[in-house]
Image 1 (cartoon, rainbow, N blue to C red):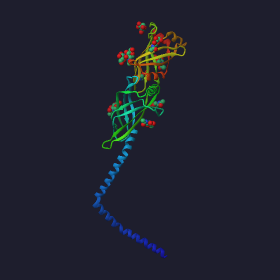
Image 2 (image 1 turned 90 degrees about the vertical axis):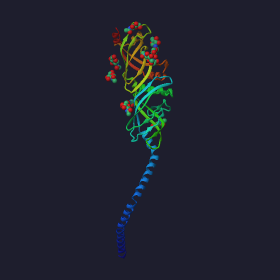
Image 3 (image 1 turned 45 degrees about the horizontal axis):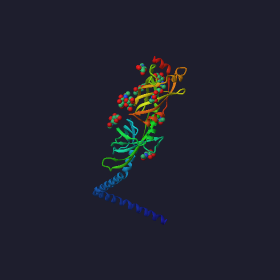
Image 4 (image 1 turned 45 degrees about the vertical axis):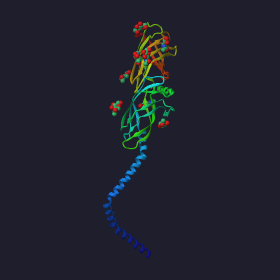
Length: 337
Ligand SMILES: *[C@@H]1O[C@H](CO)[C@@H](O)[C@H](O)[C@H]1NC(C)=O
Ligand SMILES: *[C@@H]1O[C@H](CO)[C@@H](O)[C@H](O)[C@H]1NC(C)=O
Ligand SMILES: *[C@@H]1O[C@H](CO)[C@@H](O)[C@H](O)[C@H]1NC(C)=O
Ligand SMILES: *[C@@H]1O[C@H](CO)[C@@H](O)[C@H](O)[C@H]1NC(C)=O
Ligand SMILES: *[C@@H]1O[C@H](CO)[C@@H](O)[C@H](O)[C@H]1NC(C)=O
Ligand SMILES: *[C@@H]1O[C@H](CO)[C@@H](O)[C@H](O)[C@H]1NC(C)=O
Ligand SMILES: *[C@@H]1O[C@H](CO)[C@@H](O)[C@H](O)[C@H]1NC(C)=O
Ligand SMILES: *[C@@H]1O[C@H](CO)[C@@H](O)[C@H](O)[C@H]1NC(C)=O
Ligand SMILES: *[C@@H]1O[C@H](CO)[C@@H](O)[C@H](O)[C@H]1NC(C)=O
């Protein structure tokens, strides 16, 4: 009983103490804030500034790098011109997609161009490109390289690249390099650029055809006796200058039945049509023609010559892409009369 009342009294006392002390504290605090509010604001601002600056200086490199990593490049025009055994001229217009809220400027830098096969980077680059200063805008900005003469870093890599471009529907390449990123008054940050792009390529020249074929029965032996047009669509944004291309025409029955020459061949986006002059061994061709007048012919690139020099990377690429065509020999003979 005694214990119980003791507790009740203590609880009451505590309650009383609390109730009476609150107004006093509230008034004190009010007075304090009225007098010192500016100090509180100042302290808050200084803390905020220090925290923000720390975040920027410590976090900026990470934010900048993740912004660069999150950007993607989309080619709108990609040209490989003026091929030589050790050099190529590259024009590349690209749209840079950036989801970052920042609009930084990247210093010019030297980028290595890597071929990426089945998501795996080849160990050595194909070549390197000088990327100009880029002001990265949100959501897109343009990057363009016009007529840059580049040295081929590795012939094997370029051959693989050319072969993939010719034979596959899509190809992936990457540009990698180190540069500096500027964003307003924020500190300059070193960033690592490593961006892969997958784009449509020539897809094995699917849709290839030889049309308007005419045989010249009076042409002397060894002279071009078959004239026509070569047609194929190019679904990509690629322009590729090949030069003078020779194709071999072969059948199962007779082996090589002739060859065709295409002068100054430059593949451009969209439909491509080129005049073709071929030398056909008529006896061998007739021996390969079936009862309905059709000849199944395999067409393979055998030589690519630009300014008198063999362009081996294109020769190997063309050699790996054998085209098959059913030629209507009866129709050709009828058209040629
Ligand atoms: C970017 O390039 C496209 C064509 O590829 C053009 O229409 C557009 O105006 C360019 N934008 C800028 C900002 O230069
Ligand atoms: C190539 O890319 C297109 C989209 O651009 C896609 O539809 C197609 O499936 C891809 N083909 C291959 C073989 O990856
Ligand atoms: C670029 O990134 C890929 C992974 O996405 C990596 O395999 C490759 O080694 C990197 N290349 C360079 C030059 O940093
Ligand atoms: C090639 O063109 C001819 C007409 O010139 C046409 O009859 C034939 O179907 C075409 N072949 C292919 C594979 O497109
Ligand atoms: C056929 O070839 C001969 C000899 O090369 C040439 O004189 C003649 O003009 C050619 N005919 C056609 C229709 O091309
Ligand atoms: C094309 O074939 C003709 C006759 O078979 C031959 O004389 C000529 O040398 C060949 N041309 C090439 C570039 O192979
Ligand atoms: C091929 O190009 C060269 C120079 O690039 C030119 O002199 C020549 O006339 C062209 N030939 C044809 C058939 O277009
Ligand atoms: C290419 O040719 C095809 C028919 O062969 C036609 O349907 C298409 O519109 C042409 N494309 C262009 C860009 O001319
Ligand atoms: C292709 O051959 C023709 C005639 O031989 C020549 O005039 C022209 O310059 C050659 N084209 C190239 C790009 O080498």
